[in-house]
Image (tube, rainbow, N blue to C red; front, side, top):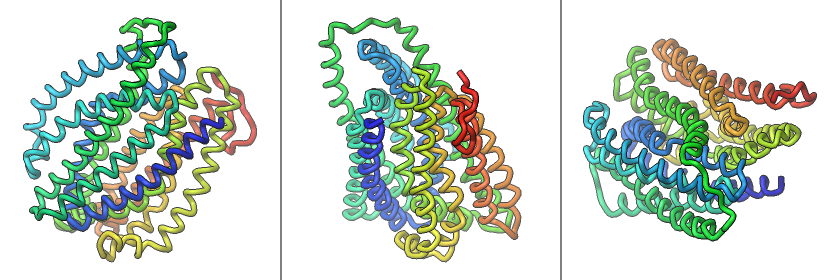
Length: 443
């Protein structure tokens, strides 16, 4: 338990510094791109991340879970098979992406080199996922923390230097923003591979290593990777559809396409940047929870699982509630750090349920992965997304609600998702919903 809290502390401290840098990154982008530019940038990001999700195959999660559950003598063989599988999948996905990207019409309104950046991200993501998964599994959270911080710091330095030295039109500025993102990922990959190489050399010296069947390793990894990837793909598809659904609803409500895009840019580029700032704590919980919960569940230690759930819910409440109170009372000065807009403070204040419930959703999802309920997590997300999209279109296209209706849909979806995750976990590990009386344990 001590290593659990130590891992959270290390990740949280470094993640806080990283989120401060991320905040600065979004400020730089907002000032450089403006409302419309931020709308365009935030619209293309989900499509880029969709390819990233495919490239990763969620090997970070599956490898970390496998490493946490198995003894050290199995690690070296598993990792070798994982690397071979990842290399083969990367080659196939790269070829498919090169063939498919030119026929996707959404990219036509952006700089043509953006397609090349997406292709470059595939091998970067694929191989960094293996290293991340291993370090998460053995709970070397310091290396994960350094990698996360380095990525954001490098992205900020690249953006500030390039935007300060040169002037670009809007299309090229968006391209530069994505180039900085890819460049930072390359730097992190170099660091992770160097650290991973050292660990692999150490494991090879262990004469007690056991050789595993490649087929069995792939089967074990895919049993986690496929449903987790399905969940991430669902996230990416939903985030890719969302900007266009919001724009369509707002246009139907009477706004022009440009104004609708600007509203979306304010919400995602300003309100989301502020509202998700405290989520670095939730992501720190999530990173540590997956291997910790996996290990406890493999040992059928339900007492420890119940205690972990209580602690995570309590700690999330402790930081989440003060955070949304601060957003409410300091909405105007916070949003004006990006650019002055009369609507941005209002949107930030109205989105407080969306942010608060997501602080709970992130660690609860990691908990579900750890206890093997990845498919349940996927089903929950699909239902919550369907509800959100239906409410978005009904209320967002209503002239009386417009963007307020969009925000109400987001809040409703976030609450529904949190409740579905939480109730499912309570039933699985044998604890009452109010976290007091234990109920019949489920094996």
